[in-house]
Amino acid sequence: MKSRVKKYIDQLLGKKFVLLDYDSTIAKVPVDWLQARVDYHTYLAGLFSGLVIPEFARVDEMEALALRHAPNTKNQVFGFRFELESALDGGHEPLPDICELIQHLAQQSDHRLFIVSNNLHRTVEMGLKQLGLSHAFEGILGVDDVGVPKPEARAFTLLQESYGLSPEDCIFIGDNDRTDGGFCRALGIPFINITENKT
Image (cartoon, rainbow, N blue to C red):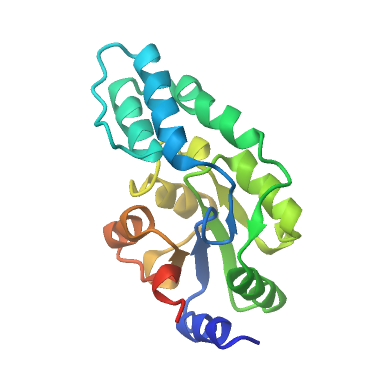
């Protein structure tokens, strides 16, 4: 077992529920996100003439703005992401350390695993199938299941209602301090940022 994987395992001690991000945590989804920002800005400008979008906003930030502006337009707002992500089936690149960690945890009975992702549910599901990790997760929440992206904490309410999670029994593994870290800070959940654990 790699020393980094052992380090992650040590950090999970005493936690019953392990929540993970998907893209850039478990696997890399091969999207040119810089180009996607430009294209999505244009897409949303065509949908909502009165919506003001900052020039350098990320896709998930634009989604959140659009959904606050027009809450009943989830299908249209996520339509762009659906077209973008469904073209990537079979192309997800596994991140070995976290995939090894998931395999290890799936063989134990000490932890229950869940995904909370700003990707679509279908993207995560297809990626886990490609990586051979579908069996490891009790539940998946994509941004389309929740209706709003992280760092909004609504996903946790859904997990509480469906699976009985409590913040004090959870730990979150992700790669983005703004989305994943912000989600955790709002809930008081410890956050393992894998970008800080690469040494």
